Length: 395
Image 1 (cartoon, rainbow, N blue to C red):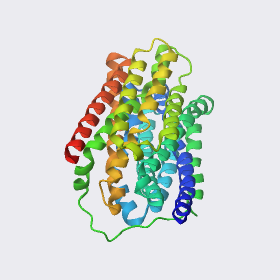
Image 2 (image 1 turned 30 degrees about the horizontal axis):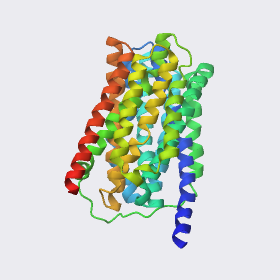
Image 3 (image 1 turned 180 degrees about the horizontal axis):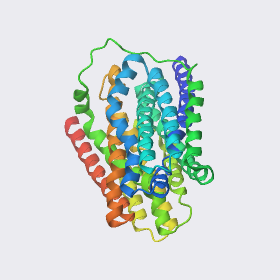
Image 4 (image 1 turned 90 degrees about the vertical axis):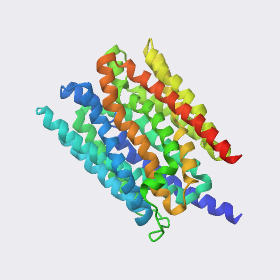
């Protein structure tokens, strides 16, 4: 009974943290579908520039994940989250300035890039900090459940923020959407202040970052290949619909997010129960089918079903692999390990934008989703290989 009481108390402290993440991540979700439209239609630049505008935020997280993990391990997750929320607000305000400079396209674009870089740093700090904070609250035995709830908050924000961003952009322009994005992390900061901290290990011995990466690279690579499908939807789904003269372009992220959250809510416990690799194998197969449907879609309904299936498939891969990573390292290295682990996903997000933009320029927007399907299949092959290695070691 005493153990149950402690666990319930930790769960009660975890849920407000998840709510804060949801509110804060709307700052990421709102600009995601409208940055490409802003760059191509208002600044008059090409698809590669649009992909760079989206992807540079994710690239920024790659080079800051090690810093975010070390800060979380040494100074505490609360410090990392607080600094990240400040970066969110600063990045949104910088992007707002870009929205006011549409008469000077190149200047506006480079100001936009600066804002997106700040946003990427904020995402790194908040993402790693919330993971370390959540696992510290409930313990590693329930780490997959923590990661599932975190993902549900993130992609729930994407499901809400995508159409909100498109609607606000249509009515108030890019600057108006960025103004809303700047307010949200400030509200999250007010909520974070009174929350309880978790213990840190500032004096524990720490191996080099690349040594930690050597333990987790296979699981990180699987997550990276999974992330290409989501990045394709985030960067090019709206432009794909506009090019096809289809309606309801803003519902792509909503369909993805609904599928994503549904699986997280119903099956978030599954990796803790049966292991991460079996869950990842089935999930990657579903994602590949979803991406292929978008590529081959004859009408918008089929494309939206493909986005839904992509969300269903992507949903459990991160917590499934994250659960394996948490169990591979000591407690005082969890922040560092999760920082390196999430960097693989960031790399996928960051590279997909500009590279898929090149593919769209030469082979049409549908080709972007063919690339996503192929990446999911490659991730599936790696997951099967990882399971084979695990079974060999176990015997």
